[in-house]
Length: 294
Ligand code: NAY
Image 1 (tube, rainbow, N blue to C red):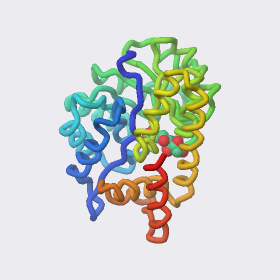
Image 2 (image 1 turned 30 degrees about the horizontal axis):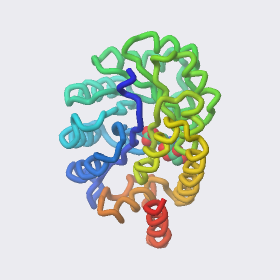
Image 3 (image 1 turned 180 degrees about the horizontal axis):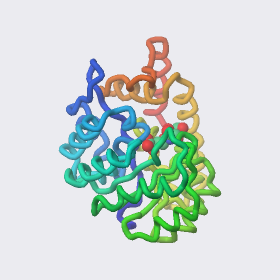
Image 4 (image 1 turned 90 degrees about the vertical axis):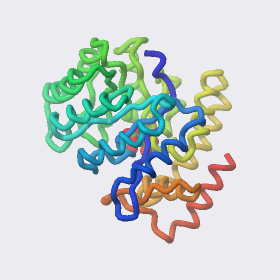
């Protein structure tokens, strides 16, 4: 599994001016992330608005990504949907289009017992030959992955890791310890990338990487070289940028606007995610310069 370690951009989706998935724009965005040192892309996750899209749209986004960067970047596809049936359909579709790994959050809205979430994931795992990465994001789903369930799932060869988007580095470390050396833990909160790496994460998957991939690649390099003080200083600079990004009505709208300043058009995020408004354009241009100068 070590071949899957690294930095993955939680990629935004790209829409046209009418708000429809725009495959050419998706391709342009995927292409933008090649040659920057990242391991791959996480498609259709939180940042990718997978749960705001219908099944057909999610398939279109993935197909565009695969057509553009298959073989160049490792592609993890988020197939989590509310119904197990739809998730299984998306998982099979991902496999048939050459994706490398599938991943899913629990079903949301209903407060489900652990057994239901386990069954939900197990059906996806059984539906393909692809490796599976559990997506744990308790602050949005209301479901916290227990180390007991993690241990049960991780005992299967196909379950290669967890994307840990919860904010506790203690839990992150417990997941790593429970899963063992051969089980991959990906850091979720970008603000805590270095902290997560220090406590055992094998890499990271993040949305803000999308506007500063080079900085996260460098941060990971500094960590690997054991240049911890330098890494800490860089994480602090990155956190200054993230703090500003989070001050806008929507993080996705802010990041997408920054990409558009670089000639990468991805359209507005899909409502209810708010777009960047005109009053914020000047400060976003300034933030873009700050990123480019860091
Ligand atoms: C995904 O699936 O898009 C992600 O990997 C999301 C990870 C993000 N967490 C959330 C809750 O959206 O990148 C982070 C997050 O945007 C960042 O740390 C800023 O808080």
